[in-house]
Image 1 (tube, rainbow, N blue to C red):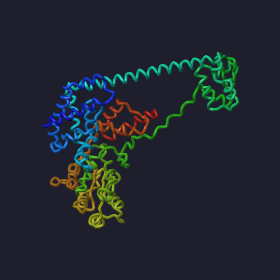
Image 2 (cartoon, rainbow, N blue to C red; image 1 turned 120 degrees about the vertical axis):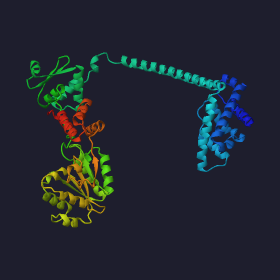
Image 3 (cartoon, rainbow, N blue to C red; image 1 turned 135 degrees about the horizontal axis):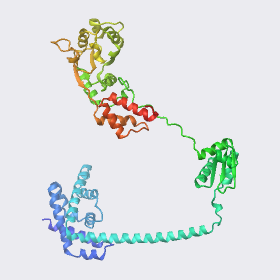
Image 4 (cartoon, rainbow, N blue to C red; image 1 turned 180 degrees about the vertical axis):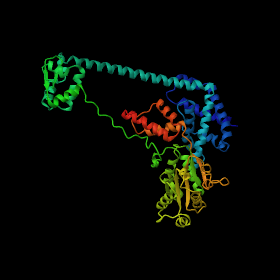
Length: 503
């Protein structure tokens, strides 16, 4: 039912193309042949079918003869047919919205999208019509010819300008004096100023250039003596050996530096980035990776449980306590107390250290300690909990820890570090598991994988001029077995070797 509409649109488009200037005679002949018009109508009909399936609500509004034969729309379609650039969907959408009397932004935006789809469908159909190919190709051929003619004209002009410039240069060279002496730098004046000690940085640059060009020579030591100088002086000899200048003092020192630059000062390297090499890292910014373990511990502590980090020696368990201590106040609302059990040799030491850190005036334990801590919210971080297996630490201490940490309103939540699971570390009886194991969620701290170990090395080296080769990094990863402490120590020694030569 659109045949009449498409015929009218094709007539308008082809008439516009015939009226445009610059068309070649071949294009004019093609436009007079009916198959091209018919091909355009077929492409338009197929685009219409596809468009109606995609946008049925817009189809009736688009395929309106008044709209499609407007001069502005005809110009857009002719540009698409003649391959002179992509029509602007926004322009077509604006014309369309005006036709439909839609001025609101939402309608204009939707019209732009729909218009783009229609133009894309029509372009695909036009490309598929072999009878229309001659039209676009003839325009392309005409454009190529025009561009070729322009380029040839410009090349001719460039050749003419180059020939004129060459002629002027040859004339200028012919006017120069024949003596080559005029091309030499004023070395005599430079040497005179140099010997009198009033030379400038520009004079030194001239001397260096003359040395590189072989115009002068500077002699020192025995050679200077053989030329008439002194053993502690320097001699400047001009290139033709007709002038010898003996230098003393600062001028001699500078002359020697011209041929023997002073040694560069030893490079000062930044401090070794692979520190500390043992024990718990106390600066949270120096701890690498372990975000997963810290996040898991915080989740357990928020839920009311205590946690125990379990892993091999040197895997970085103690450093995790530093991370938790840093975040206890802001993320848990608890005041952190960190006790290193390596420094506590008995229960008396433990209670005294605990009370001092908690701000309790006198050392107390048992019920008195529970009363002193009532209403407090503390995070007790115990490093090297294995120490509690030694003589001097009893089951009662561990039971009291459980009592102070059990329950939602308990004053303590615990974060412990151990190499073995707590129920194996504290087998308090054959019938009962350890009181600590019952309230602590175990978090296994595993060695780094190879990628993490390499990333750690590169991150620490990034702020230094030192480079570890791939083979060196591979050896460091292998000997560390993924343990951060071993990797840190091995990398520390390699960095020290590279920067100081120590072995």
